[in-house]
Length: 273
Length: 328
Image (cartoon, rainbow over all chains, first blue to last red; front, side, top):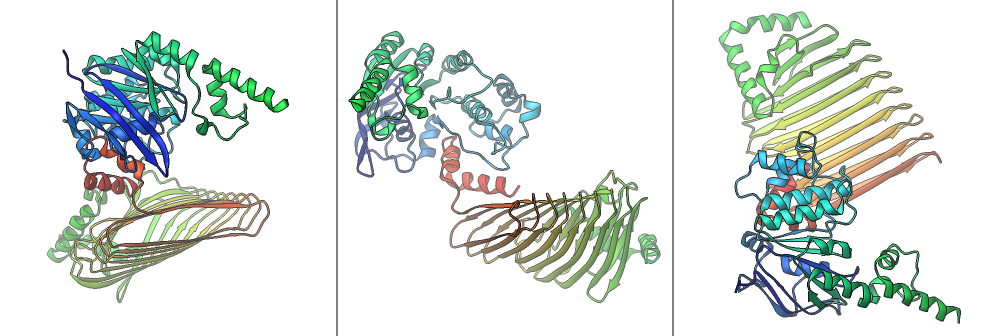
């Protein structure tokens, strides 16, 4: 049987006295696209940062194994050199660093032709974007596409993509799904973090995360079904009660979650009563 | 005056002139310039080594007058009204010996409706004790445009004092874009002191970039008076200091007329035992004017750093890339 590439075992994370991750278990195999689905604030991004080893994301308990070896003591650079990388939900802006150079940073041997191809694929014509800086002059969608290009160029063993589907322009969800499948075809495992259950269609396996723990792992269809019928929001992330239905987070959750909608309706009724 | 210089230029066959000119061309290249461009007939060029005017090449509409004084040169550089200068005017200043003083007293006059780009390269490659004073008066005429880019190269000794001072007046509809780069070699001591008055619908954009090491000292003092209606101004300061270097940035922006808009943007990155300071002053004297400022002083942005680390760079490489990008 194939050995797992990444094993997250009973992972707990506390920040400022709040339990962010409450015993997360997750297994990803080589070349697998694993979607991690969950509402905003459920701990998906925190899990990503913890796997990558970001500052302030040191777990209080649990283990993270990569190729069977514990990586918790490794720096971000060391983890990246093992083949792990992360595309942030809101990518950083870099003054003065040309996009072409930025995209090539993770390549073992920088290849300008490959960089140009990737930029073109991501609707960033290389002749226009290659020498432009990856800075604040890019729109949010452009910057996210640059980030995807950089991850593709790195050809990592594990790519953690934190909501690549949010706020992205030009590319459709099916384009993003196709790019993710392309990464898998090139041998990369992908941990795709999203709160859009339609992205599950890009997955081989999907897990549902809620309130700092993985509730369910199964086929994409099973997980999507579970998500739409059972998931309740991580209350703290949505602000104090009563919920304000005009908040973007609540609107987003409402659009994708029937149970939340009924809970909100119930809250409104309780208030009126 | 120009005649005198042209005579000097004609002495180009003499060994002493040729040696000094060659040294300046080498220094010019170290400062990032292209020596070929200094010799192109269609390019206006002024080359000054200490107080010697080695070359002053004029083109139609661009006039370069230079007079040698005890420790430097007094120059008048003007572009005739309505002239659009296609190729950048090249200015090359430097002191080749290890010790010396160079004073450049310069008047720049850009006539009404004219437009020109100036590339100034200042090189002090062997400096142990060199002072470079620049005292400039710049007048950008009505609807004229001047882009002035100044690149420095100081070698590794750190024995340079650079003291550029400028009084700039921008008439109605004029545009002045200036960039000062001191990012290669040691800075030594640098004190920039610029004051700019902007008329109605005039625009000023000032960019200052410096990278200090060891005990380098950076001091930037920029004052912009947005005096005319709808005048626009922006200052962008990018300084990185490491080791024991210090940086002090003082920027003042005044919105003195209706519709004036100003913005000051300062980023200073501090590494090791270096110290950075930013003091923005905002003055608004008209209820239809607006001036804003933003500043980030301190370590490199954590998210930028972690993003680069996640591509496999080590911390030193990542910080260097961020700093090099910032001061690029």
